[in-house]
Length: 308
Image (cartoon, rainbow, N blue to C red; front, side, top):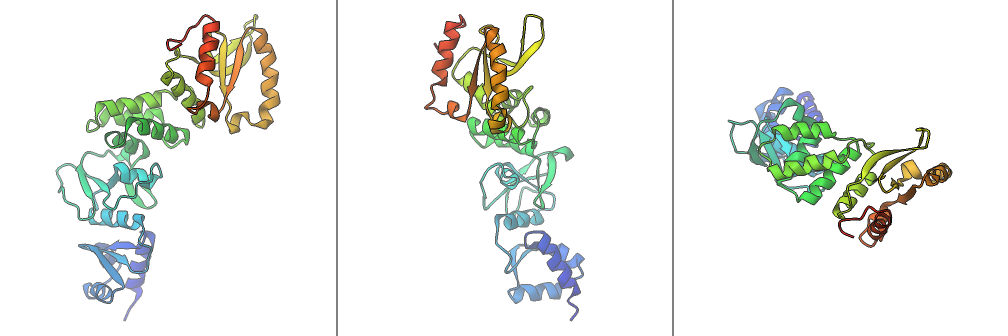
């Protein structure tokens, strides 16, 4: 017996998490009788009509997702399934959500179908799986996850350079199937990143905390000038009117190697009447007293907090 077609089919399955379709097996040269032999002998397990898994391959979520896509060749993983594939959330659902083109069948043996338009730029391939892009996935999650979690996911994606505010805005413009409030949550979360380095997720969380604490809206990316107009320092955020600046101390930008540089900046800045406060992750915990400290500083500098 010529095993070459079988070897070709097995190589295809190996690239697809152990799953393959009848069409792929036939394209590899396998006759219908040879496919039937693999099933009858227990070497292949039938997952759906015309979709098989090679017995002995790990029965992973990726295999189930691939099988769902093989059963609907016009589909892409969407919502929580796409988010799991991208590593945004840990939600390995047995029955993934699939986007298929409008006007096609709403049936899928291994998934839940949503019939929606999916522009080319909203599609991608992740771990060999057809899925919505990161930006499209985040917007689609607006109808699935709570708003606080959605904003956090947007921060993490932009912070990791996996999405941009511009890409998210473009998706929101065409995602009429997502509730308006959810799209606004995405846009609001993305807008906080304006002028901030993508990796500075801690700085963004500081800005969100200031808003939640109902403090006066801070200025951002502040340039502190001396009496000649020369730039003495640049500060992440703060209140120019109160001469109060905040620096978020991430390990990347303000680790021990930068301490001497930071200290060297303080003296000329403070001589100009400014106070610089360094903020870290611990200052954003519920147990922190940073909110009260800022309220006192703003009140003392004639810029009272609305919540003071």
